[in-house]
Image (cartoon, rainbow, N blue to C red; front, top):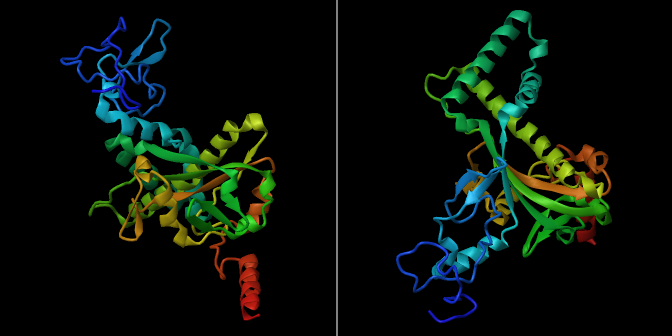
Length: 320
C-alpha cells in the first residue's frame, strides 16, 4: 500500500514488523504505540498479566488490530468516544437495597409473624435466584459527559436534539460545570411459571430498589470525581421526574451508545423493562434544595404547581 494519512510503513525500523505475522506487505506502522491501550474496552482481545510488582497490565503481543489498514476508521471512531462504562456489584450495596425494599413493602407496619415470613421469602428467594446466575449481581452503568453549553433555559440542546426540562428554568446556568447522560438496567431476572405471586412482587421491588440505589451511587461517584473542583452532583434528571416529560426516553437513548449498558429501545419501550436513562448535572452550587420540590414532576401540566403555572402563562401569551 502507498503511504498516506491512513497508512504508513517503516521497513527501516529495527523492530519491523513488531508482531509476528505471516505477511508484512500491508503491515501498518501508523499506530506504532496502540492508541487504545489505556481504554478498558479496546477493539482487540488482550491478555492480562501481572508484572513483578503484582500490577495487572495488558499484554498485546498477539494483537495486530491497530496494524491492519482496514481498521483505521474503527480506531478513529473508538478514539472519539467519550463515554465511560463501569460495573457495580450489587453485593456492595446489598444492605441499602434491602432497606429500600423494606420501606417500599412497609415491613415496619406488618405484625411480627407476617414480617418474618415476607423477609425470609424475599431475601432467601433473591439469593437463590442470583446465585444460579452470578452475572445478575453486576449492574453496568454507561456515562456520557457533555459540556455546560448544552444546557439552555428550560431545555437540553444536544446538536439538533432538544429535550424539554422545565426545572432548568429555575437553575442558574452559570453554576453548571458539566453534565452526564446515563443509562443502566436492574438485574434482568426471569420469572418462571412456578414463581409465587409473593416472590414476583419482591423481585419487582428488588429491581426498583436496585435502580434507586444505583442512581444514588452514581451521583456520589460523580461528586467524588469532581471533588477537586469543589463541585456538587445533582440528583438525576430523567423522563417522568424533575420536570422532564416521559417522551424524552427515546431521544436520550438515541444520544447514547446505550447497548454498552445492555439497554435498547424496542416496541416503544426500553428493554429490559427495568431500565432507566437520565442526566446528572455537576455544579458549583448544590442543586439538591432547588430540585427537591420537582422530584416527582412529570414535566407536564399535571406534574406540579410550577409546570401548571408555566403552562397557564404560555397559553395566555398564545392568546395574545
